[in-house]
Image (cartoon, rainbow, N blue to C red; front, side, top):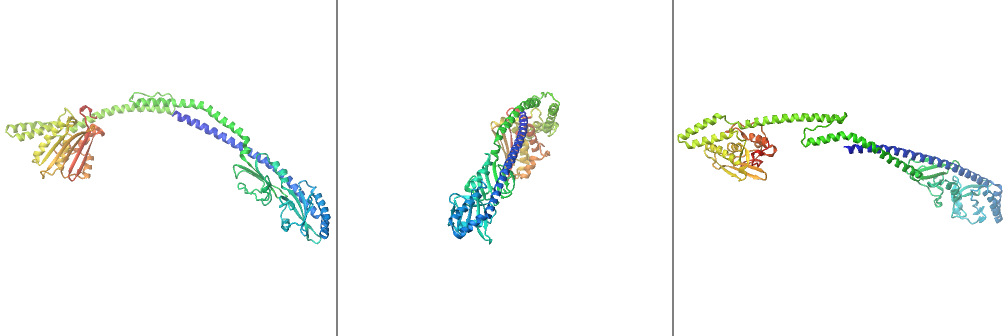
Length: 573
C-alpha cells in the first residue's frame, strides 16, 4: 500500500512537472519559429523589392533600346546594304545600353529577315546564319509576360532571364527584336545567396507559372518547381502549418510577378534550443528528486496506521482473537480501526453464543434421532414374553423375540453413539432374522466384511435403514432367488460399505427424491429411514462422508463412504 501511494505521488508530480516543462518548451519553440519566420520574411521582402526594381529598370532599358532611332536606322541600312560595318556600329550602341545596369549580362538585336544576331559583347560582335527555330522561338516568347526564360541565342549552353521588345518599322512591321539578358548565376549570387543564413534548406526564384528562374542548382532553371508540402507558394506569407517539420516563406514581387520561396528545416532553426532543452530536463529531474522527500514522509505518515491494522489482522487470523488495534488517529483509517475492534468484540460474542447453541442443538438432535423407536416399557414387556415362550418350549419364538429385544436395546442404548462394523453387523443380523421370519425365508443375505473394516467405528444403526429399504422396496418376495449382498472394505483412508439387492430397481426420480427429501420416514420397524442416515452422516462428518444410490433393472446398490476411524474419538463434531 505504501509503495502504491508513494508511486502515485511521484507519478502525479512527474506528470505535472513534465506537462509544465513541455508547455514551456513548446511555447519557446513556437516563439523561435515565429521570430525566425518574421525576420527572414523581412529580409526576403527587401531583396525581392530590390530585384523587382532592377528588373523594372532593365525592362525600361529594353523598351528604350527597341525605340532608339539610331539603332533602327542602322538596322534598316544594314538590311539594304548588308554592310558588316553597320553591324559593328549597332554592337557599340547595344553596349551603351548594357552599361546602364550592372545586372544586364548582354544586349542583343535579332534581325529575323537577315538571320543575324548583333550582340553587345566584344566577341562575337554578331552571329550570322542563325537557325530558323531559334528565330521563331524568340518571336514566340516575345509575346509572353516578361521576363522570360530562354536559351542564350549566342552562347547556346546557357539559359538567361530575358526582356524582349520588338523593333517596329515606320510602316508598322517588325524589323527585329531587342533582348536584354540577365545571367541566372548573377541573379542567384546577388539576390538568393545572400538570403542563405545556414538554416535554409532550399531557396528558389519562380516566375508566375512556378518555373524556376534561379536556384542553387543552375541545371534546374526553366523547370517547374514542385513541393508537396506547400502547394500554394504564390501568396505572400509564412507557411509552417502544413508540414510540422518545415517552414516555408514566400514573397511575390509586384512588377515581375516573380516569387522568392525559401524553406528551412525546423530542426535546424531550433538547434539553438537544444541547450534550453537540456536545461529543462535537468530542472525536471531536480524537481522530481526534491519531491521524493515530502512524498516519503507523507506516505510514511499515511501507512503507519495501516501497518498497525495489518499486523493486528495477521495475529487475529493466526487465532489470537484477543488482539486489538491501537487507534491513534481520527481520520478514516482511525475509524476503520475502531470499527474493526468493535467487529472483533461482536465476533467473540457470536462465537460463544454459536458454540453454546450448536452444542445444545447437536445433543438434542442426536438424542432425538436415537430415540425414534419404541419407549422403554416395550423392552421390558418383550423380555417377559421371551422368557414365557422359552418356559413353554417355544425356542424359535423365544429366539426371535430375543433378537428383537437386542435390536431395541441397541437403538435406545445411550452408552455409545459409535460401534464397530462387526457390532453393527451383529445388530443387523438380528434385524434380518426377524425379517426372514416375516417373509418365510424368501430372501438370502451374504456378508463380505474386510478384516480391517470390521474394527472401524460407524454410527450405531447406520446400515439397518439401507437393508430395510432393500427388503421392503427392492426385493420381490415371490421369487426364491432374492438376495442381498453387504460388503465393507477400506479404500485408502475411507471405509466403503455397500448394500446391494437383485430386486426390481429404482428410477432416477425416485433416487433423487430419496437423497434430497426432508420428511423423515415413519413407517417400518425402525422408523429411522434413509433421511436419518443422511442427516447423521452430515452431523458427524460434514462433507467427509456421503450416501449414494445406483440402480438398474437388475437391482439397486446403496453406497456409503465415511472416514476409516478405528478410534471413536476421531469422528468430526
